[in-house]
Length: 131
View 1 (cartoon, rainbow, N blue to C red):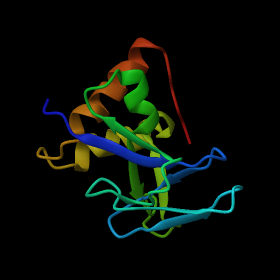
View 2: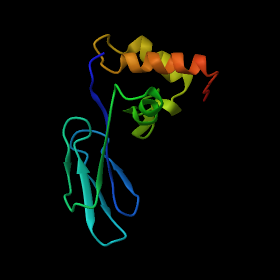
View 3: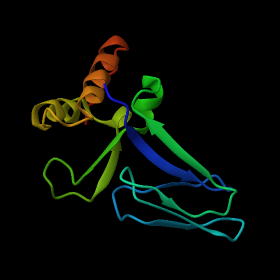
């Protein structure tokens, strides 16, 4: 599997984690220190504030799977496409959601091997997540 970025985040001095959910989703936070921090670009690019006291968090597909499943995510409106836009991390996806991803994701989707790894991880660790 070719290495690719699965998460970009920014940790501010007060511990707030900024997470841009998609390209052009600029997230802004006024920190406890009075400074304003921002993150934009999701996985496509990183544009962030540059005060020097923030921490850029980047996670890649070839890191230990325990870490990957904490940070790998999908965005969507729910299975009926009528819910609010939300982010669901791999570790929190229902078993039904994971199986649907195997059925409906195109074979060229670079995240597909990670979904399969999560299913195997759950089998090996007796993890079941129902709605």
